[in-house]
Length: 366
Image (cartoon, rainbow, N blue to C red; front, side, top):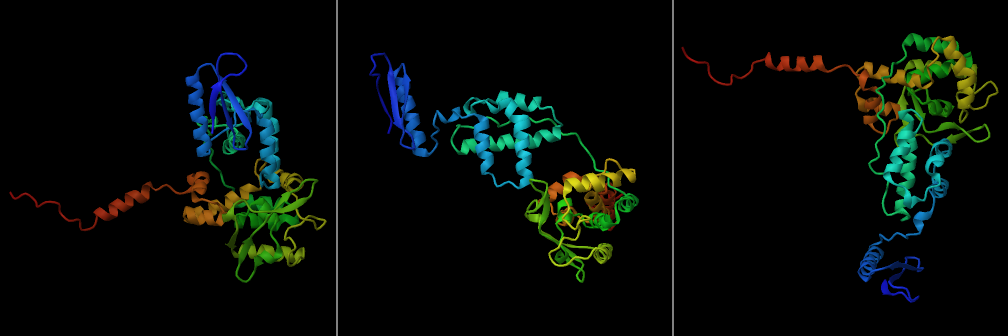
């Protein structure tokens, strides 16, 4: 329990004393007894309800706490590297030296507004800051989250322009023969790049015409690659694929034999594909040769989605094939590709009212 007593050093005033949750003695001085009593009641209430925050805990700087937070996160290697880069490049120079308890909403708003990056890049940086401050609240280093209600810059509306079949063919023709099946499979299955690289021969069921997606390859520290988990739970999936995929894979494995747990797509030395080297040495020259300098490997995935949408598949079905966690995400990315409903709405109303519609009231007799 907390207590209030007169100061014992001969100076006027009162001291509120209490022990924190760790049993450490704490105190705070006041000029008036009424203020000391009020503070004692507040401290006792927070201790009893588990809301107590050590006033000294907030002196920890944002950078010190953020580094502790970062070390404890179960991040995948790519996520860990990206988080470290965000913090060291953008966050620490601005607010890293600030004590957590002194951070104010106005300061954080100024930080967000002043970030010299594209609006789409502001969001992941800010998400990291928010996660750290939320953790500080849960750890009771600060009593509240100063990051609440910060306004982010609006994202410009961007619409994906899918590749055409001819452009996919041009890309497949431009890459070395070893990688032509990779382009075909990417465009005809919608696999992410890491999922393509992580596809093993055992994942291909030629009889049932399916691909099992259960891993991805990611760049590792030191220049190698490592097997990583997929993006989300929905990314683990078994995909039905058309004959074009089956034929492309059969021809590829006939030319570049592999079996079992071996990766379907490998480099000239038979090693797993490294994303950075593939994009630099294979994809970059191919897209230039095809006259598509801005196209990325991810555009093959967009092509696949556009084909499904054009064939009349609903958002839920498209999301399942792409391994999206939520059909809402599919709609956010591809909503403009679904056909307009105006004509179908008109037709539905016309179909109803052109039938035998009950007369609402009898005709007037002359």
